Image 1 (cartoon, rainbow over the protein chains, first blue to last red):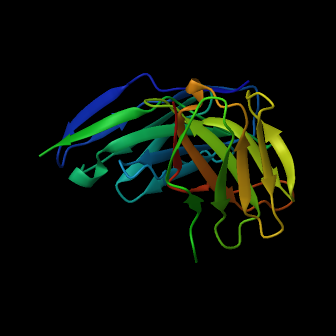
Image 2 (image 1 turned 90 degrees about the horizontal axis):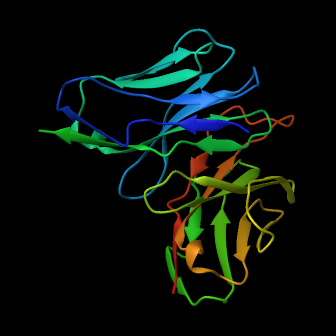
Image 3 (image 1 turned 60 degrees about the vertical axis):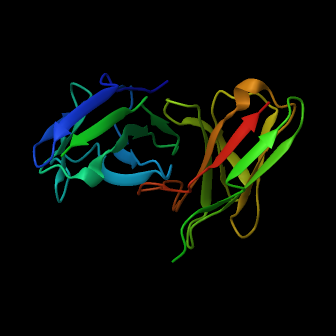
Length: 113
Length: 116
């Protein structure tokens, strides 16, 4: 079974600085999707960025980018120019071909003004 | 375009009771997945519904069951509630084409279930 590991329960960053959240996963599949979701106190999971495993190019969405290392099964999220509104729980997720999505335990990000 | 809506937002039940949670999928989506998120943890996959049939299930006992309706909305039913069932229950919808969803899920804000 696929597992997703986020080794950083908590991270903090100064406003306007850059922070990287780590994620590793375990799978025997070659075709899958990876996601980062943000969960603010409102509880709704918000999609931050996604990566298709067959694409070598790292996904980028404005201030958010990933470092996808398929061989190492690593999928880290970099947040540049951090803003106060970025403070939330961040979850890394893996979705297999059968559409079953697995989440990591999450990283709580604090942004200091 | 409407998002995913879940009802109720909060619920308190007594151990041994039964509960039904409801989810309306985003317009244009045909697949619904349910997740249980215990406090301080990541969401755990319960099951997924596509074409009104269960299309995958996580490690949850049979007392967790569901339905999907022709309009793609869905229900999660939990029988014989236990204290450990206290959690946030998240519903997510997606569009499945040719057996695959190529995009991320759209999540609702969840139902907070407390079992006492």
